[in-house]
Image 1 (spheres, rainbow, N blue to C red):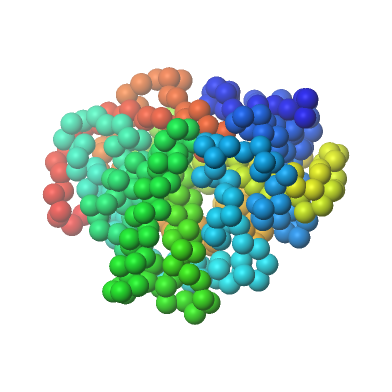
Image 2: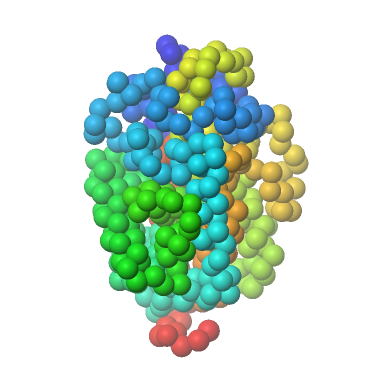
Length: 406
């Protein structure tokens, strides 16, 4: 691919929307790109093309064994935690076995009591706010949004609360996608393996125990792999959803009223983020089962196709009036599409965690405002997940709850 665009660099941090527009203008709806080490792939930016890829699992398979580049992938390739080779997880199973596996996960998550979920999200959110509320200033990324989702998810899965910080570190290392990625993956895998072994002996009322009780015959190793996927997919995107929504509410006059107790604006801001600033920008991926054509490109058997979720969301051929984006239009690709999309119960859990996290901030920190100019806020330099590196705020100092009810 002599015209391939490197899938990396500072523009994914500073101006991704402009970059996607340029890619679409210069290359069309299916863009040749290069991953780390010059590995070729296709980035699908067209809404209709992405719908086609995610809706046809026979032609565009989730089976990574089809990849025609495995012989060129070194053992320490930094994207291996994201693009798995012979990993027994739900991400890479296909057909009826995938449907059984997805059902096991959905059933385990669907059994989460929504009132208990909200209560736990509030509890952890209040604990985090208690650590900063007296100071009158905080970084709502490092001290809040990057810690909250994994605390809640770890509790739902069955982890002791004190293992949360180590899981946060491991997951953030995996997100970085560089030299620490494999170490982070190793820590997460060993933690999950210990939890699964413990729950196999002593079941409890948690997600892991419900998955182990499923009668579809999945091994402990398969369940460990699925839990790793669920934790990684649930934590950082939700953390970025919180951070990106708070940034929007603090910098856009349309949402100013929500800073004084309005709740409709919270949901509207969260929905607009999923359209305009989605945490999961690009996803790997699908593999062509045979030679085919897509968006005017000839795709060879075994080629990797990356799902350009944000690019598809901003496709001018399908975009409605921007004012409709805050009205509950959920036709975005932010949770994926097709049989490998994010399970609906997982979407609901992420939404409850994110919305609760935002509402606790607004409830607990009066007169909250940015401590820096909006233009100085920086993003993670990643083509995969889009989130703030920090969100410095100031507010009127308030007392900690200290475990009292809200």
